[in-house]
Amino acid sequence: MGILIFLLKAYMVFLMLLLFLYIVRHYFFTLNRAFGKQRLYYQDVLDEDLPTVSVLVPMHNEEKVAKHILDLLVASDYPKEKLEIIPINDHSTDRTKEILEEYAQKYPFIRPLHRYGDLPRGKQNALNDALKIAKGEVIIVYDADYLPPKAQIRTLAIAFKDPRVGAVMGRVVPINAGKNLLTRLLDIERSGGYQVDQQARYNLNLITQYGGTVGGFRKSVVMELGGFDPRILTEDTELTYKLYLNGYKVAYANIAECYEEAPEDWNARARQLRRWSRGHNRVMFKYFLPTILSKKLSFWQKVDGLLLLAIYMQPFLIFLGLLDSLLLFFLGEMEIASSYLFLLFIFAHNSFGNFAPFFEIGTALVLDGAKQKVFLLPLMFFEFIFNIIYASLGFFDALIDLITKRTILWQKTERFRNA
Image 1 (cartoon, rainbow, N blue to C red):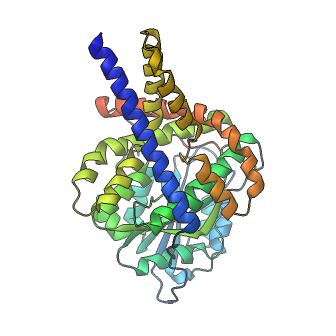
Image 2: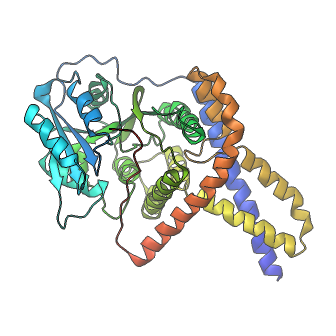
Image 3: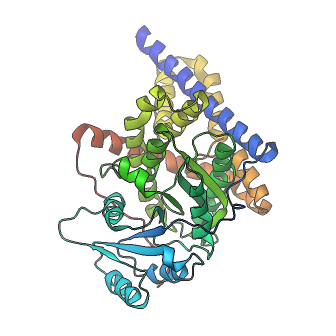
C-alpha cells in the first residue's frame, strides 16, 4: 500500500510540473507576441518569377460548398499559366462529381481527380494520389469549405523563394463565428492559436506547425520524404515533424487569413476533436524519440517540439490526475487537499482545442481588435471539460491503432452551409 500511495503522489507531482511547464510556455509566447520583436513574413518580397502551383482541394460529398471555393480559386490573381487546380473527388455519392466536371469544362486549369472503387478513402490517401499528377513545384492545400481571398495563393507561394522553407501556413478564421455559442468559443480559440501561439513560435524559431489547409509545401521534398502515411489521420502534423527533422522549416503568414466553416453542432465538434487527437497522438508515438535524438533541431526546438507532440495527450494525463486525486482521497491521504486545489488553479488557466490558456486568447483578441469577445473567456471552462473527454477518447483510439494496426476509417467534418 505504501508503494501505491508513493506512486500516486509522484504522478500528481509529475502532472503539476508538466502543466506548470505548459503555463510558462504560453506566458512566454504571449509576452513575446505582445512585446517582443516580431518576425516578418515574406510579404514584402517582390518577385515575378513565381513558382508553378498546384492547388489541391480534397472533397467528399461537398456539393454544399464546392462551387464557393472553386469560384474563389478561379478569381485568384495568380498567373493562370502557372496555376492548376485539382479538386479531389474522394468517393462522393452526391453531386460533387458533376459540379467538378462542369467547372473543368469551363476552365482548362481545373483538372479534377475522381477516386472510386477500391481506392482507400481519406485526405492523406487523396493527397498522395493527387501528388502523382500535380505539375506544380509548390502544392497549396485548401479544405473544401474554405474561402480563400484573391491574393492568397501568391502570398503563400512567395515564401518558397527561401530554399529553407519546406512548408508555409496561413491563418484560419471562422466565417460563422456568430452562429451560436460553440462557434463563438471556437472563434476565440482560433485567435489564440494563430495570432499568438503560431506567430510567437515563428518569432522564436521554434516548431511552427503546418496545419493541412490554408498552407502549402514543396512537392519535391514531400515526395522525397515518402508522401503521407495513410495510417495517420493528421497528415499535417506528421509533415511538420518530417520537415523539421530533415532540416527544413515552416513559415507562418499571419496576414494570410482564410475563412472556414467551424462546426456548429457539439456532436460534430466531438467527432472532429476526437479525430484530431487520434491522429496527433499517432504522430507523437512515431516522432517523440526521433525528436529527442535529432541533430537538426536546437535544444529549444526539441523542447517545444516535445510539448507540441504531447499536447493532445494532456487531457488524458489530466483525467488520470483526477482519478489519482480521488484514490488518494479515499485512501485517507487528506493532506493532498492543498495539492488538489493547486491543480484546480492550473486547470482554471487552461482551455483546450488549440490548448491556449486564457491569457493567450485574451491577448490575441486585443491584437485582433475584438476586446468585447473577452467576456466569453469564462465559458471556455465548459469547453475545457468537453475537450478532456473527447481528446482522451482520441488518445485511446490512437493507442488501439498502434497496438492492433487496424485500418483507419477517415471521417470528414459535417458541413452546415447551404449550397
